Amino acid sequence: MNKEGASHIEVILAFVLFVGFIMFALYFFNPLNSSRLVDTSVDYLLNEIREKTEVAVDFYSLKIDSSVSDESIQLDYPDDVDTSKNVASEGEDGEILDSRVAGNNIFVDRKNNDFIKLKFSETITENDNCCQNAKNLEAQGNEGKKYILASSNKRNIISEKKISEINKTYYENYNALKEEFNLPGRVNFAIVFFLSNKEVRMEKEIPNNFEVFTEETRVELIRDDNGKIEFADLIIKVW
Figure (tube, rainbow, N blue to C red):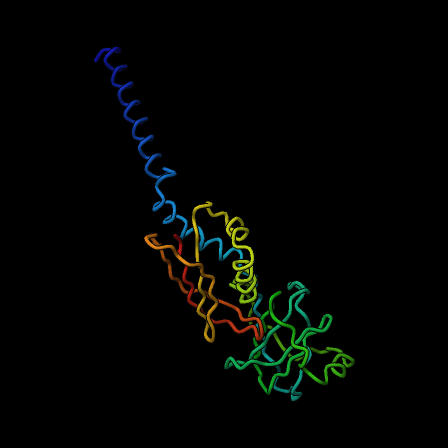
């Protein structure tokens, strides 16, 4: 094949590739293709919801020495946990235990549990009713610790408190929330969380004849009042 023939083939191939690219761009990025725009917004919105509602939760499991007989115990606040976080605790069987933070100490009404699980989060509600003898314990100090760290880890988990915050914004300033989620102006959305004992609904009326894209997933969630970790169903609607 001579050079002139090869040159013609290269021009034709370049033209075919160019046309193919234009067709691809028009198909996927056509501003008039509302269905594709809405469809792709579902996964994007799910990621945005996670980002806006997740908090870092620190988990610690402690083994209490069998020689300890006190109902309430004093523990050191972990060095690697942000001191602005509150604490929730539970026994080995998942029973909620009263606990609170006081300075660099943690007080727990352990109810004779020899194994305690602690959770630290900025969204856990402070427990002011815990440990009536906390002042005596604080005065005694925590010399000669009678517990050992069994395990620790950190995870990002959706917060009930953060859900309540975006629920409030949804009804008070919907457009601002949509901008915060970086959604296109003509895309609208609804969010529903099904918790173990309640529903949190963020819903607008959907006009007739609108195509609605729905995504349902199961998410891990931390409760405000007791730090309990549970699973919730999350439903997203976009139209």
